[in-house]
Image (cartoon, rainbow, N blue to C red; front, side, top):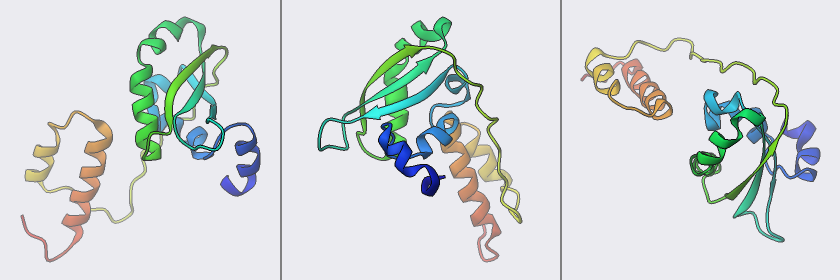
Length: 146
């Protein structure tokens, strides 16, 4: 997608097309059902402190307005720097996002029980998934013992 749509995405305010294609991963399934990114506008000559334009289903606009700091934090975590500092909401129709796919890595071994129990207490599902992947890769190494 970056090769095909890169120029068009940049023209309409998206530095990375992955913001659109990975929106459910960035903000979570709950918010991606009622919002969709339209553009990110940056100040002239900068690639930081931009304004993220979101389309929101009208009935959900008040809720989304209250969680904009969380959305800003998630988008900035995705970029890895302070890319967005403000969010503008526009009420409109939001197409249903494609379902989040739970990808499994072929040949991944089960997580050892002692590690799996420790990971269940982690509240952030993204962090827990990353740590589970790390634990699985460690378990796959033959010389690793708990």
